[in-house]
Length: 337
Image (cartoon, rainbow, N blue to C red; front, side, top):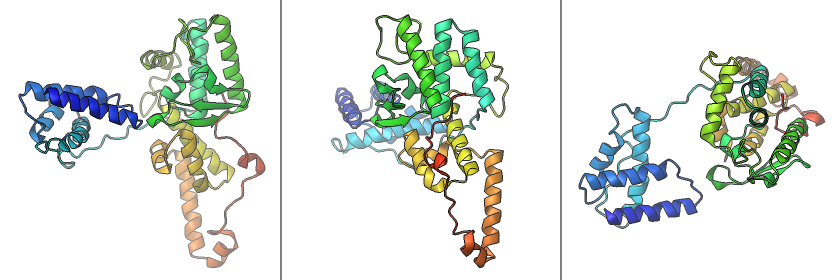
């Protein structure tokens, strides 16, 4: 298996050079190579791949399918150099990870979480998490993107964040609402007064002055959820990532209320969130009662116009409402609560 281990190192190096982080896959594939070695396999077979993917008796079907997918990509690479290698069929474990229903935060929920930070945490840590939660709620950033922000990435004079560590290694710029800029500026002053000189280039820092780690952020968030009294909310307990779902859904709802052309705006939202296109953004949109009501009204108008061509030509189906200047020029980021 020495040769298989060398091929794995080459494969991971090539994939990472192409921009893939391979955080989970980078841990699973070495484990698979070790499994093949302990099984005495001379090369990758479908039988060995299936045995490794399903070895956990408590694993969900989607997790076994995901593990097999990890093997499939590596096996295809090895097959080019060793024809004996078998590539597990895509249909062998057909399963998709179910979409978990997100919790959509109201402004009151976000305020409760932010207000809980200075109550439940030490002064500087409370200010850090209050500002971090506000930024996530008003921009829909991925948690990892916010934690990866350096001081040099935050141009608060112009109100723009530069994300250099986004998904797939992409870079994008995110405009901010003036109230968000004001909150970030206040935090930066507090951070600079607390740590002279700076101990980390990170914008958000811990009480030790170092970059925040996701595990600690997640544990602290759970504490704030309890303090804010949000643990018993339905359909499920709020997650940190649900702030991104909430931003996307509320932005769509705001556009409908403003009367803008939502279909034309969806690519804007996709770009702002760092997606390759609207198809990826749809994952974050949830059918809230307000959105369902709007959809029902639009369907009624469509059916009425379909039976009245004169009305459609006069401004029904062919009408594209022009948003007022203040709406056309507004930024995606929502006002900081």
